[in-house]
Image (cartoon, rainbow, N blue to C red; front, side, top):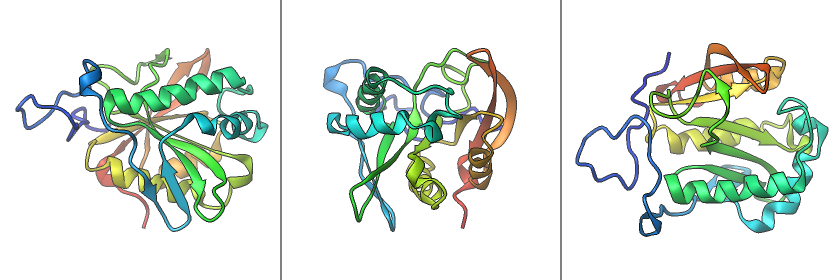
Length: 215
């Protein structure tokens, strides 16, 4: 089980305590908004914050059965994708962490969406709020980008950013999603419990920051 004191450093906290609260709180008002997502780069990829212009490519990704088959099992409407995109933009302002759009640096092609999520899921047992292990990490790649090592490359960049800030993170994976389970294991995620989400079983896994990305 990963440690409960998951937040090592939370930008914007001025409580004077050497250990911030176990669950981050959103900015209290507009004057305390956090900065936008930092840009991360790897050998092949550029990770940047979401923007309204990403809608068409994100909507196409979530309409692909290769993407949604193990993530809810149904395509997401353009409206749902738009709301998700705006949530991703707003989470950085509210919490100081969030998710990134992933693009091939050479082509500019959108190949995925991954990072830290504050989803407030109706999942049992709960995975967020006070007493949570840590923020949720999620990853999604377009069908064309799967099987090329992009997920590992992008997640390594994400964990290089998150590990100094969070002692632990959580992820949820469909029990039948073998590729994602293998990827999670490579990065040190360990199954904690089988939960229930949308009346279906879901695996809840935890990762300690010191697990680190694979070498």
